[in-house]
Length: 315
Length: 315
View 1 (tube, rainbow over the protein chains, first blue to last red):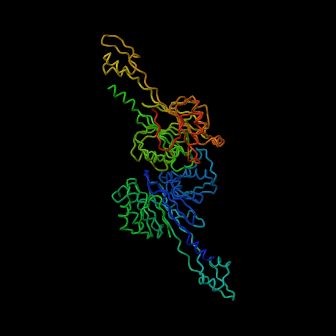
View 2: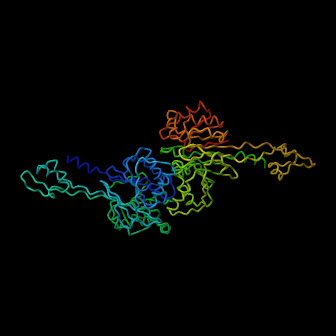
View 3: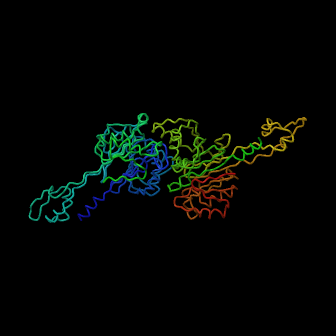
């Protein structure tokens, strides 16, 4: 049994699938923003630009495992695929409730579209507004806690941080044999109980277990101007996706449109001491992405450029 | 000069490009409904399902020549690409006004989305509600008249008919030489004037011209249940696009969802004496389309199945 449990913990996936890493103007082979965060086979969507439902299908994402959707802001390239996705989920027979988190206004748009299309969904749709100041725990299930935090963009915009739920400690296999611990006791020990052996001797919990692996974490920051306020909220995450709409030559345009450059993203990653940085949300003017790496890597070494249909595993 | 004019008339295109002929659920290689009607290099869009702006780009359609958009109804697979298209037109620098025709409600959706995205368009957008009873002339420019007519669907839904503007008659070349008609008189003769020759003799207009080619026409009918009411409105059009969401085996489902079968479409084409029928708006369950032809052709011989990215020329 232990071997199986150990194997099970090892197998828990924490992946980010890039469904789209483009920006406002459509580009061939680069969809507008959408991602699937998959944790232990539960799926969570961040943003849902036009065409996302097709990208979901092309990436063989299982929509029945979709637990919640987190929309960063109400620019079209981040949410215009949502109404179509919701309709399709209903047509495909979804009955499980679906929670949607976003800055204010999305509920009004979706309910108006549902009303005018005469549609009745087969499942409950709940909307929660985000966008308060600071870091807020907005969603929680058995596998993950999700936090929202404000980004600085032309309209209210939210970043999201996904943190794996703390795991139970692992029991030390040799102690089971040594103290003859019955299987039924193991779950209590994993939750912190001490053990009394056959001779009535108390074995303290800390002698029986090894601490669990640190919870993995992922932060999504798009769209935003360079903003050091977010650093404590994304501190030491395993993976940071940070927008870099422009290269440095267009820094003035980044400031004007409240976007970031590759160097901005790298500086944030460095200051926040994250483990890995993935860039995305490139302006349509950029076809090749090598220069994004060239500009960011001198500041933050472990930087990657997102491409559609890539999967980033957090190990 | 005459040769040039004749050549010019021959060159006037009247094409329909199928950007999407799918229905509510997304299918690989089949977009939701959208078409471009191109008349003498002016473009008119019918419906604008999700992903249309990418299909426009893939088909090398010139958006700067887009004169007006006609939306049949407010089911998502017919309009969810519109907001993205409008945003892109503005980002790409459009300043020419754009007219949008649709059943009631679309203006409210688009204006709400524009407001919440904090967007200001670079061009004037005007909305006109359609959906009155009978055939109505709703749009007109130098090249075309467009008519709306009500279809029968679960929500208000409009068909559209495009009729080429009547052409001027063609002057008979041999008469120019025979009567020594000066070039400057030709435009008046083409508009119906008689001619007085050098000897003062009146030559009646009908002796100088041959009637112009009959105006070409196209009708779009999607989505609709079988409905003979539309027959006079689409009578003898050169090309009819009629939805056939289902094959006959699912006739009960067509009735329930207020759609048509291939046989329904063929019967309408036959009764309306159209020249050519194109089927489309297939349910996602159909991959191969041969059976649509097999069912429709015994009733109406000149039937075709639409596929995405096809162009139908009306000659």
